[in-house]
Image 1 (spheres, rainbow, N blue to C red):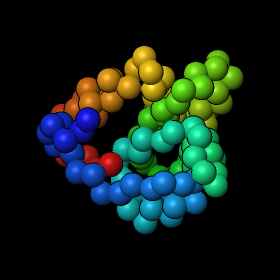
Image 2: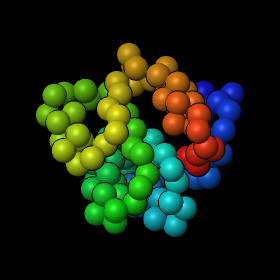
Image 3: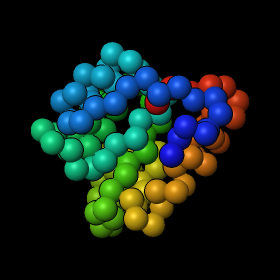
Length: 107
């Protein structure tokens, strides 16, 4: 989905919450795409960790669980975007392209 977006470099990927925290802390990407449901720790827990460490990463929360309470919690914790996997996943390339228009970004 992101291979045709100019100005980005994918530097990491994790399959569970603890690995995501470790990878994000080490790589400090410009943009992080997080699923709310991750094995080990939730994406919300990872978001809390990113913000607690004051990392400047822009965070896109991605979920099948678009309940208002999840949206509110993610916004309160500092997510930049909250997207429904089914209805809004196609927005990701455009969001990333917009973030990368002035300078290359890492994901």
